[in-house]
Image (tube, rainbow, N blue to C red; front, side, top):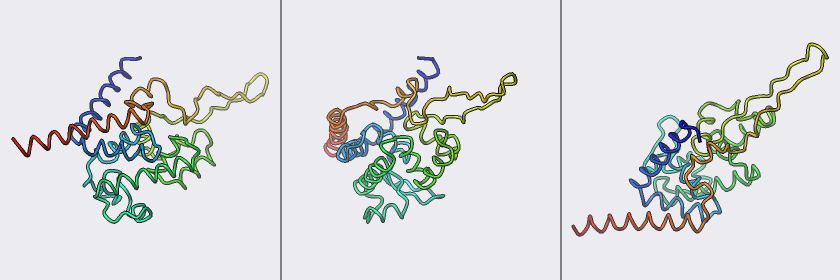
Amino acid sequence: MPRTASNARRRRVMRLGALAAANPSIAALVMQIAAQYGLNPSLILAQATQESGLNPNAVNPKSGAQGVMQLMPATAAQFGVSNPFDPVQNITAGCKYMAELLSEFNGDIASALAAYDWGPTNVKNAQAQYSASWLYYAPAETQNYVMAIAGIAPVPPQVTTIDATTGEVVTDDSGDDATSIAPETASLIPGLNMTTNQALLVGGILLGLYLGIQFLEDYL
C-alpha cells in the first residue's frame, strides 16, 4: 500500500477510534441499530462520525440538520421522530432512511450516501444525465462525503477524441465504475466487511466500556 494511503488509513482509524472511545455508548448504539436494520454497522458508524462526530446534540446552523445522524426536520417528521436529540430515535430514523435509500438505489453505497447528503432526486437526475460519471458532477461537499465515509472517488467523464488518420472516434474507457471501492481506499474504512455478529460484539464491548466508566464515576 502506498505510504500516503497507509498514513491516511491510520489517521482515519485513529479519528474514528478516538470518537468512539469518547462516545462509546453512542458508537455502540449506532452499530447495534444498524445491524437491526440489516446495514453494515461499520459503514453507518463511519457515516454517523462524519455527520456529527457522534454528538447527539449536534446542530448544523446552515441546514438545520440535527442529532447523531443529522436529520433534516422533514426527514425526522417522515420517520416519526418526536425528539431529534434522543439518540435512539435519531439513529433509528437515520438507519431506516439509509435502508430505504440502499433499496431505492439497488444496494449501491455511493448512490445511497450521496442521496442522504444531496437528496435522492438530485442523484437520480445526475445519473440520468451523466451515467457512470454522475458523482463527478455532484457538489464537492457530496463528493467529499462519499469519499470520507466509503472511500469511493468520482469517476471523470470519458475522454473522446477523433483519430486524425482514420477519422474514427477513440474513447478512453480506463475509468473505473463509480460505485466500486478502490482497493487502496477500501481499507480506510475499519471493518467495512465486518459481519453482523462481529459488529454486535464490538458494540457490546463499547457499551461495556461505557457502563464501566459510569460505574467508576459513581462509586469512586
